Picture 1 (cartoon, rainbow, N blue to C red):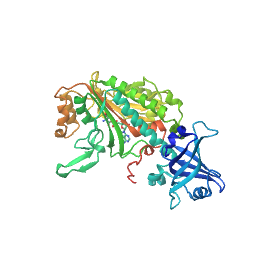
Picture 2 (tube, rainbow, N blue to C red):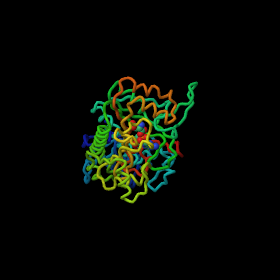
Picture 3 (tube, helix red, strand yellow):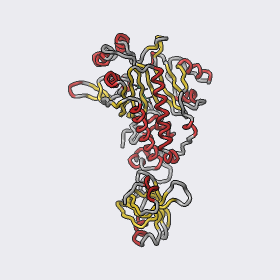
Picture 4 (tube, rainbow, N blue to C red):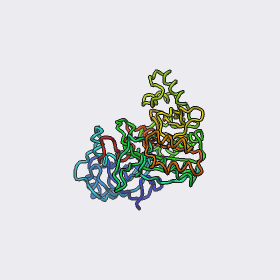
Length: 431
Ligand code: AMO
């Protein structure tokens, strides 16, 4: 019977076959320990007589690192470690023996070498664990939204209008229609969709021609945008913090083997509870000054500033109500101060940096039209967006969560490039 390693616990004492790869081997001609992986987990296969015939011993000898195999044997609980299973092997079917030595060995490799070999590096234990956490975060987000009345609306990737500023657009010539851009965010389209479905989210690749070589910037990243009708600034932050707690709980529940491989300290995780800290931008600047930062009012927060704001906090920190001058055209002006907007950035603990950007959207036709014009945006491309404020306009808010930023925070990956299977950075688009 073929099984997945993740189900081995249900087959103790039975003879089963696992289909996978041998990533390491120890032993001598008398006994071999095969370290096997099949994508669902890891398992040791012990190859020794009498269970293993001389032919099976020979097959084990032939296997080199990353050869693919089907291995049959009896499952046993590991004598020392809880929840670990091994196999007493009595059959080996070799699927493919590597023709050359596998390039990624146990020795230290530099980042360039690893990135050039990303197609192989993905098989490494740590990279495997990070991709599994990523998958669980995606599931948690879908579940959270469906439970809270949001439906998934797929927004277009090819768009004639900019959402997040003209400086980071990737351009494409689109037949006779002129220049279009790769989407920076599905937000504007979701705003149209919620006037039909009330609450919506999307989850897809977004693109920014960012000339930033930081550990937190990709040029292609996956963003989950959410939008909700009748939800105002405060309620939007409540949705955001509940979503982050749902993600953290799910990862703690489903990813313990992965977090163990990543040597992730679970204690800070357990402290992530609502309500998150809320600081207005003005309060944040004052706090930063008191902590020795020389940031000026009206400047964006740098990496160090974000670190200072969260260093003494067990929970992520909202910095909200930013100066209008440094934020996008669609944000709603703060009714209590026309220089500010009703927006928020959510800064993660443990050096995670900004993981969410959100805001209440301007719902007045006149104010939004003026903002589009002031920004120098091509008015005709935004007429449909302005229309939303002409027909049954409602207060509404939304936010965008950067999937890779969240995965980096949760896994404590050194660099964001490890959190996406094939990273696209300013200087890298291969493999
Ligand atoms: P914003 O520009 O703040 O907001 O982006 C939302 C979130 O996306 C992530 N992010 C990135 N991740 C990796 N590499 C990048 N270059 C990058 N840029 C942004 C961050 C950020 O918090 N339209 C709004 C969202 C909304 O209000 O609905 C927007 O795009 O985690």
